[in-house]
Image (cartoon, rainbow, N blue to C red; front, side, top):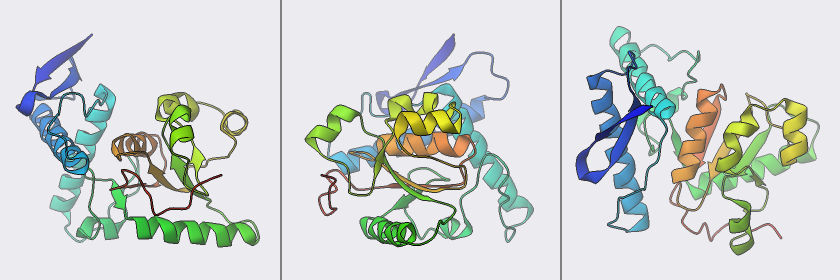
Length: 229
């Protein structure tokens, strides 16, 4: 039973009817966020169509808006203060300086060169003694997409469609189902075909306690990466 409100450009967002935490001001904030997401998707795909580009659940909208409000309050109280890491998890200080282009506030967007350096470091760490936290490059596309365009070499697959279920599993069941372990303090970079699903997956991970999460942007074909066999 959710209410649906129209927004600019024919896009729509949902909010739960009677949600006391989601005010008219919050809905306006969610509308602005959606416009940013649609604009970025238009830029990355060169498509004028905006119909169903962004499909974000009520919980995700509320989490994004609450996070933006919390960051604004933190800046008001002490502009130089470090942002605490209490839930919802925070981005590190370097990401607040504008050095990285962001998808929405609170998500870091990695470049191809940064991801390649991440993979090189990951490979070195795996050759040595056990290192914690682990580094994970996660492809959130569906399995049938991987046959047409193989994963980046060194990546693992966790489809966005299975993410909610996956995050509810005990660690042993997760590893058995998906073939790799995952911990809350792992360094995680996500990617997909156009970065929209990766951005959504990053929001879900941050919202469930994962603290080091980013996604690969501008990667429509990610052609410069070595692929898995």
